[in-house]
Image 1 (cartoon, rainbow, N blue to C red):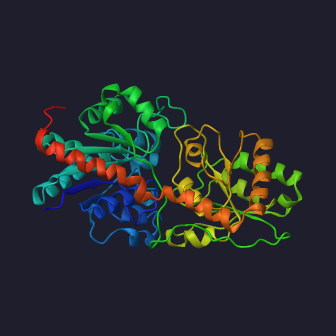
Image 2 (cartoon, helix red, strand yellow):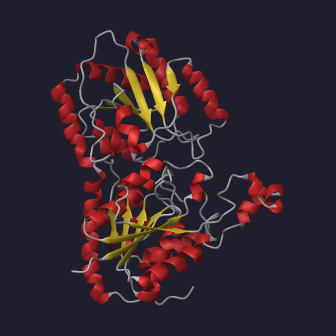
Amino acid sequence: MTKPHLLMTAWAFAPARTSGVYRAIGIANTFAAQGWDVTVLTASEETFSVEGATDVSLSAHVRSDIEVVRVPFASGVYSADVVRWSAARARHPELWSMTHGCAFPEIGFGDWRPILTRAAERQHVSRPVDLTLGTASPSVDFIPGWRLKRRFGVPYILDYRDAWTIDVFTGARSARTTGRAERWERRLVAAADQIWFVNEPIRGWHAAKYPSAAGRMRVVPNGFDLIEGVSPAVKWRPLAPDKPLTFGYIGTINQGQFPAEQLLAGWQRARELSPAMRSARMILRGHLGRTGVAGEKLSAFLERAAAVGIRYEGPVAKAEVASIYAEFDALVLALASGPGVTSGKVFEFAATGLPVVSVHEPDSAASAVMSGSPVWTPSASMHPDDIAAAFLSTVERVRQQTPASRASAIAWGAQWERGRQLESGVVGARALLGYDRQVSQPVREDL
């Protein structure tokens, strides 16, 4: 039997280390593992390497039977290299950014649309595509699927790992949304055969916005990744009563999203209340924003944090994640707050079996993931006293954990492995394929 052919578009793919790349790799790997031929359209490696936004260890986690097609991407908006800027951009950078690349209309990605479309059509002509999937943002990733559906009747899936016109922190209309973006999203959603979302709040908001498409919407969550077949689970080890505790955080530290000031205030309050917290330390690991360079506010935070036992120790390659977790006694799930915010790290934290203290608002989608964990301590609010109380409870969890309770926590977290999370989506895609081979027709729509 001939394998079905999936054409997936992901602007960022290994070895890029940008947001969403782990989901893109996971989707491609899961489809391939379930017997599909998979072709990935993505940007050139140089797009990310020139800004240091790569992790070469990621490439080893892409199955060898997946074909990766690099589609040239050129956008001055994305480039931070001022040497490459035109005189017009250098003189009026904000005006230039507002007018450049709006054809899609996404600033910085409009120039990619025609090149990407031609690449998708070439793939279909050379080896017929049975299903397309675009994982966004950027939302230009949705265009190849829409185009092949319109011209050739190929069914397509929109994978919203983020939202386009909705603010995931509030559920309201995004302040950056234009009327043209609204029209494009309406058009894409209307023609899509399935629409995937990473959590229920984001799905619910879109279902309310596009009720006629609600029946085609489903939640396909993120998950943690197995590294060379091994989970991030941390083996229990005895803890000396007088040993200072080490709290750990692994993840991107973005200015304005990472709750730096609330975390610092809660940590300091906990140190005032508990001798165990006064001797404890917190290690932060991960990239500082997209570029890896801390801005003025973030640098000031790290300097103040270092004075009270919070130390930043740099980024971590994907291949090293498990060994870093093993150095910690407990984890700090510090996230931007909002009902649509999950973060891929929550699944990895759950898989370790280590006690986890949450520093985010209770209505975060991350709370829904962690709610069944036997080692999770949420902060009741982002007030310093509530964060401090959560830290103190976590100290007790660390001291009381046994080999059996650690094993129980690891077993609970195993459900969040990415392949398991994505499997239902792939099964649904196969069912969709069988149905649409009989009834799908090209979409007759003129722009």
